[in-house]
Structure formats: C-alpha cells, structure tokens
Amino acid sequence: MIISGSASTSLAASLSSHSKIPLGKTTHQFFPDGEFIIQTNFQGDHGIIVAATRSASDHLELLQLQDAVREAGATNITTILPYMGYARQDTVFESGQPLSARAMARSIGTGTDKVIIVNPHKNIVCDYFGVPAIALDASSILAQTLPFDLENPLFLAPDSGAISLAESIRDSYGGGDIDYFEKKRISSTEVHISPNTVDVTGRDVICVDDIISTGTTTSKSASILRDRGAKKIFVTCIHAILVAGARKMLFDSGIDAIYTTDTIATPETKVSVAPLLAKIL
Image (tube, rainbow, N blue to C red; front, side, top):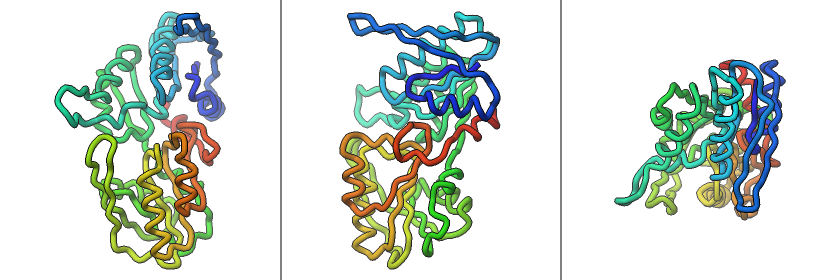
C-alpha cells in the first residue's frame, strides 16, 4: 500500500494509478502545544511511503509515517523522497557546522528498508542512509515539457557539473546544442556566475537545473541571455522550490516559461515522475 506525506499527495495518487498499488489514507491530529500525530489505514506487508521533505514539518511527518506503517504490521518499507530537503547541505563550510544531508539521511534510514530519491543534488547522499538507497534520474522527462518547435535550441546548464543534465534533456528532445555558465559558490548563500562565450542570437535557450529555489542564479543567466539576443528563454528543472518572490524575479529577467515535475507540486508542474517510479518499484 502507498502512503503519502502531505507534500506529495498528487504524486502518490499518480503513482498508485501507474503501479496499480492501492493508496492509503492519512489523517492528522494537532495539539495545542504545536505537536501533531498522524494515523494511517495501512494494511499489508510492504509499505511505500511517498513524502517530499521540503520543510522540517515534512521531515517529522515522514518519520511518523514510517513508524506508523511499521506499527501497522509492515515487514518491508520503501521510502520515496521525491525531493529531499537539506540534501544540498552536503559540504561543511565552517568549523562547527553539521553535514546536514548526512544527518537527515541517517534519521530517515532508521525507519525504512530502502530509499529512492529523485535527483538528489549529489548522489553521494545515497551513502548516508545506512540502508540501500538509489537515486532516480528524472531529467529525461523534462524534454516532454518543452515546445516541440524550438528554434535552433541551446540547452544551457548552470555550471560544468550539470552538463550531463543538459545532455539528457537535449537527447530526449532530439536535438540542440549544449553549453554552460561558469558558476562559483562562494558560500552557502552566495553564488557568482560568469557567462560563457556561446552565441545565442536568435536562438531559443533552455536553462536547465536540478533545483531552483530563490531563482537568483537563473534570473541572472536569463538577463545575460536577453542582452545577447536570445529569442526565447525557457527554464526547466526537476525540483521547483520557488521561494517567495522567485517567480517575479524570473519573469522580470525575461524568461518566457518555467516547466517542472511533480516532485514538488507547483503551478509550473507539467510532467509526472510517477511512471519512472512505478517501473522500479
């Protein structure tokens, strides 16, 4: 039976439809002190928990879901993380800081037998759970979101490390060139980008990324592309967090459209990762 976290109800329903695995129900009870408790109607031996952990509350809910499903009799639990919060905190910048990706993974790993993560920022996070964990690459389905008649398309990665992401989308689309922006992370909050020398005049440019949060880097890239004569600029990503003000910043920079998956449900969601997940369950 599939059990969904609050942040992944739509994806869980889609996964249930594609996999033919029944979808359970979950209710929440909230207490005056701010605590909450969940209850499920789980039945069976194999529990599949689908829960994006965008917030600390989502993370706590996931831990409760794992325990509730185990308490209800599950002998095997698979935890699907459509989006794993804190996964980008995979580097310690200063003495005394935690490796937060590892800390969060360890806590999740104690309540499950297997983990599936959709495009973690770095696959090394899979080593932190203490149970078998695999990273599912959903980049190829992003091509399905794009207009079919792109003009001399250029798939532009945010840095050299994301070239494979751009290549996957380009190959699935069926043609186009690849390039990238030089991006240097100064700290956990500051990123500096330097444009490459690619000619974008009159071309449709697709800015690709795994995660877009504040939109600052992408909007800077779009402004540079506009100044260089790009015809249209599209943004596509696996996880669209899009914190407050990000959408306005992106569209003010000259972006024509944003496309993303349902790992995080947003108005920009155009394609589901459910078929990919169903294949590996």
